[in-house]
Every structure is written in structure tokens, then in C-alpha cells.
Length: 123
View 1 (tube, helix red, strand yellow):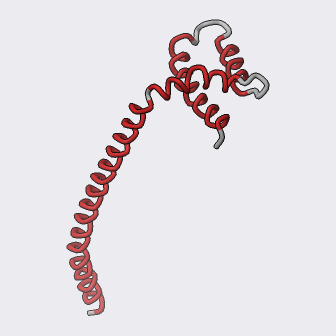
View 2 (cartoon, one colour; view 1 turned 60 degrees about the horizontal axis):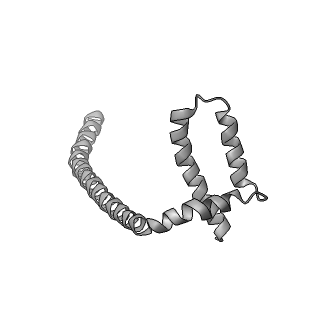
View 3 (cartoon, rainbow, N blue to C red; view 1 turned 120 degrees about the vertical axis):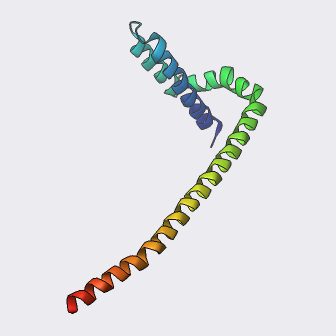
């Protein structure tokens, strides 16, 4: 992935975060939807280099400044996701084990009931 593609992807993510907040706070302003559309066109259109300007001027320095915190947060998130997945798999295995034990208890009694009903029907 080249620099331009990564800049656009980072900006789209940032735009979605800012858009959510802005929609909640200032969507009542006149021409808000049109201004949003113009911003997206500015960032997207190749002749304006809008995405490059915003990324180089604002987002890249911000990401570089907080890179260590971002990396640490991602590592912590990965560790928590791994721990949660492990605990959920253990819980699912325990439930599956209980289900298998219950099934093992029920099957012989149902087989016995089926045999006795067949024997009673033939006699």
C-alpha cells in the first residue's frame, strides 16, 4: 500500500469519527449536509490533493506523536481479546461437556424405553 492510499484510509476513519460527533452536535445548522459533501469531495478528488494536505499537515504528526501509546493500546487490546477468547472457549467447552454428560445419561434410558415399547407391541 502506498502513502496516498494509507493517507486516504486514515482520513476516512478520522472523518467517520468526526462525522459522528458533528452529526450529534451541529446537524441542525443550515447547509451542514452540503458542507459535509464538499469536504468529502475535497478529500477524495485527485486534483485537490486534499487528503494529502490533511494527512501531512495534521494526522501524520498526531499519529507520530502518539505512536507509542497507540502501539501499547493495540497490544493491550490484543492481549485482552486473547484472554476473553480463551475464557469464552473454556466456558463453551464446559457447557459442551455438561451437555454430553446429560446426553449420555438420557440415551440409555430412552433406548431402554424404546426396547420395552417394542417388546410390549410384539407381545
